Amino acid sequence: MAGAGGTVSQESSTDTGTQLTIRVPADRLDQLIDSVAGLGHVTHRTSQVVDATEEVVDLDARVASQRASVDRVRALLAQARSIGDVVAIESELTRREADLDSLTGRRNALKDQVALSTLTVDVDKAPTPTTDTPPPTGFLAGLAAGWDGLRATASATGAVVGFLVPFLPVVAVLVGLAWWGRRIARTRASGAEGPGA
Image (spheres, rainbow, N blue to C red):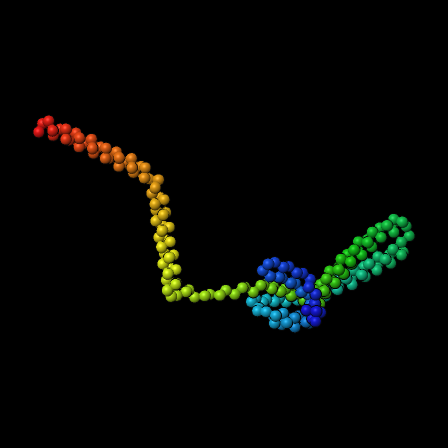
C-alpha cells in the first residue's frame, strides 16, 4: 500500500476479521487491487466508477464567478464615501467571501475524491479446518456400541419405572378395594348357600 502511495483512512476490526478503507492515487488503484488480491482468496469483488467531470467544471466556473464578484465588491468598498456605505459593503463582502470559501472547499474535496480512489477491503479469518475421522470399527467399537445400547435401555427403563412409581399407591388402593369387595361378595354368597342348602 505504501508503494502505491495510499493511506488507510478507516479501519475496523472484530474477532472474525478486519475492514480497511484505503485511499490511493487513481492511477495506482489497479496495481493495489492486484497486490491485495494476491494476499488471499478473493470471495467477492465489486467496483464502481463515478464521473465527476461535470461537477468539477461547474464548481470551477462558480469559484471563478464568485472571485470576480468578491473583487467587484472590494472595488466598491475602496470607493465608499460614508460609514453607512462601508458597513453595507463590508457586510456584502463578508457574505460573498463566505460563499467563495464554501465553493472552494467543495471543489477541493471533489478534486481529492477524483485524485484518490477509495478501496474497501474486508479481511476475514480463515475457518479452522475440521478433521472428519471415520467412525471406529472392529470388536472394541462393537463392544462400545453394545455398552451404549445397554446404558440407553437402562436409562429408558429407569424413566418408565420413575413415571409409574407415583401411581403405585393409587393402584394398591384400587386392588385392595377390589379384593375386599370380592371377599365380601364371596362371604355373602357362602352365607346365602350355607343355611338354605
